Each structure stands twice: as structure tokens, then as C-alpha cells.
Image (cartoon, rainbow, N blue to C red; front, side, top):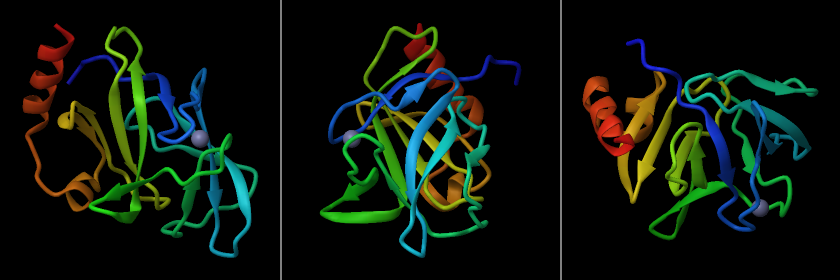
Amino acid sequence: MNKTNIVLEKGRCPHCRLNLCDGEIINIWAKLLDGVTVPVQLSTTVGDYTVKSESPIHDQEKLTILCPYCGCSLHKEEEGVINQNKCELVDVKIVGDSYGKYTLEFLSDMGQQGTILKKNGIEVYHKGKDYERAFGEVHANNETDKMYTDIRG
Ligand SMILES: [Zn+2]
């Protein structure tokens, strides 16, 4: 697959709607098991699971991901229940793509790799080795690539 990377230009908190992307990083806060909240930087490149933080974050550590601006949880609410494993950004804009209303869902546990990009609730792209465990139904990559290409036009 020699398609160019999918890179976020903007991704907003579902609560305060502020953009958490700044250049090549996504700024979030992570509340660790001991209750301490630390700033964390994620990559805006979908599928790059590099995590940067001044505090050590252990692999598989259960984190609560928060918006650095309003302090609200970025965890996804599904049928009235907060999903401890999944987070989301809304009104996502992809570099080189004029549509600005994608939703990006990603796993909150460090070391877990799964990301899904949705348009109007429908998956258009996914990445990550833990994708299947996280999101269940799996489309072939070329299939979602095609959907994504169709949408990009
Ligand atoms: Zn917010």
C-alpha cells in the first residue's frame, strides 16, 4: 500500500469543540492509575502510535483521556455507558481533504493500537493491530481504502 498517510489537520473535543491538533501533535491529558493527570502528545498521523509524555506511562496502563482545555473525558459514550477503552475526536479534518466532519475513534490504553475514521457514523478507514479486538467487524484494508478513496473523490 503506497497511499499517502492520513494525517489530522484538526480534531475537536466533543464537549468544548476546541481543536486539539497542533502541527504534528494531538494534545491530550491522561489521568493515570494513581490519579495524577499528565499532558500527553499523540501523533496526528493515523497509525503512528508514538506517545510522548514527560511522565512514564506503562504499557497497557488503563488511562482516562481528558481534553486539556475543558477537562472533560474524551471517552466515547455508547448507549449511555462510557467506554473505558475508546476515545473520540469530532469534526476531524484530514490534510488534503476538504471534508471537515469526520469522527476519529482510538484506543485509550497505552500499547493498544486501533484507530477508526468515520464519516456520518460509517467507517471509512482503519489502522492498527488491535483494531479487530477493539472495534469488532473488520473490513479488508483495500475495501476501506476504496471507501475512503471514493469519499475523497
Ligand atoms: Zn474540551
